[in-house]
Length: 213
Ligand SMILES: [Zn+2]
Image 1: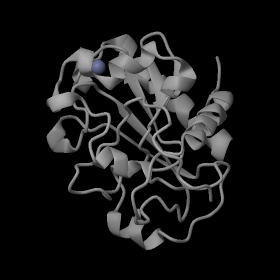
Image 2: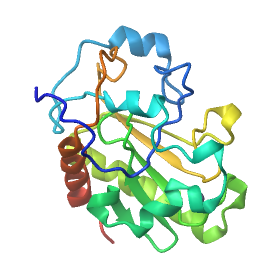
Image 3: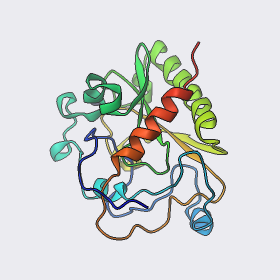
């Protein structure tokens, strides 16, 4: 395994919805006990390995809106669409929403589907946004199956910080691929940083597998 190379990676402020005091919480719908029981029996997949030290950087507060700001100008999900696809780890862009890799993934290929509009609640989406968020979610599932052979998925939104949303001000739907015996809940050891090449390669794989039409 390559040594961590320091904070040279994409600085796109993505997130994962885990409170700082609960760094190993399972994604929505996942039994943490079951997940722990499966840890350590990892199987190979197209992404090569599952290793998420970058979560520690998020837990330490990197790339979160300053002071818990809810303003659009401080919002990473409003900033990312203005970046290039590779810089922002954008996988696909729709008319009113987009899909982006999570910089602090639960699992390799963890991405999020967000409306471009800075809205916080699912009921704030208009019909076009509702339909396209659903459509991009379906395409994400297809792309992740093609790119990585994902065997299952956790899909969902956390509405409000009390529900676990790390950036509650801007709605986002998580799409987390799962494999039998995946290792995303293995303990993280030491001070580690994101391996930018892994995320860039993952973005390329998913973007290439993204279904058109
Ligand atoms: Zn926003």
